[in-house]
Length: 431
Image 1 (cartoon, one colour):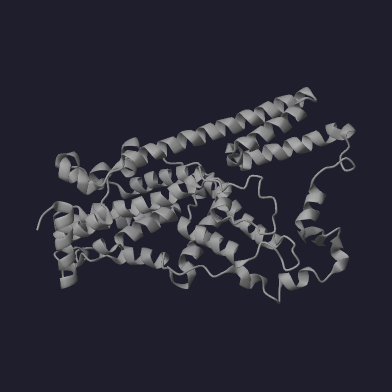
Image 2 (tube, rainbow, N blue to C red):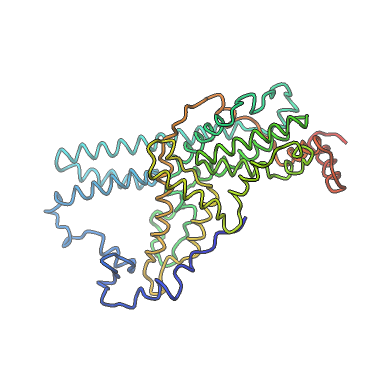
């Protein structure tokens, strides 16, 4: 999979960086402006510009600034609630809120509402993470289950959900739910590095967890392995071919919905070596629809086809008249790579030591777009039976997938034959 090219080329010597500090007439107290927009400044100047002091906001004007502070705190707690999982942050918030609430009765009610809303969000997050942990702790390898309780797994995905469109809808439910719990802070924490120019090493320097972002990546991997498991499981060739065609239809419906993450996970599962080597099975499959999907998600030219389709879905979402048309679920691993290379390709500081606002505006733009997509409510009816199967049914490990593949269609060369013997010995205890 090709890497997204660094964004540093966007800000080379012929562009933004070179011209930024040539016009001294646009500077004011260590801050640089262009068309009245703040472009850069030293960290010290920015702090001096933003933080109130005795001269800037005298005590006798606290009533004038209280609404602004309350508005800032409200937007902060609504947009970045996970910041306040830190006990020190929550303590400081309550202290500042108490000072504001000591004024007029209106402020007191607004402060209470803000704190209560934040606590509800954090409680819901904790509950969600407990559910994820429970699912993770009960997951087992399918081969282990088959060896110990072979009758306990009789169903396959088609017996649970025979309609590909319905399965695509339920996959979209899972995607949107997991997206919704990823906070923008997690993107920052995923790539944050200590700024060597920041001497304040004592204040909030611990790296925060990115568990919900990581859980979403794990879901992608699980879905890929689930697809491969369902294809490799059937003993009969025609049943395996039917399963492949079923997942092709599911993938196509995901594309139509705008669920690109499930689409790519399904394609990845069907392209895994234990599946792709089943040549006799694939010979019975009508692959025209699959070829079209692979073309749409082709990684060449930095995923040009996918990015075009994503822009189309994003445009549809902007003009949508229904929740169904608003759905945009990006290929998440590529989104993470884009943000990573943007972060790595551009320096946090400009050569003169100023904060590189252009870089952070670009980062904020990408994360903000994601935040819009993740807030869409899923319009499809939930099917608990299908959802439970997708989330909890045991799947094969990589070795177990290869073993099932070799058992279905025998080894084609000495390398495969040696691996088959090794897997039978280690996984089944047979020679």
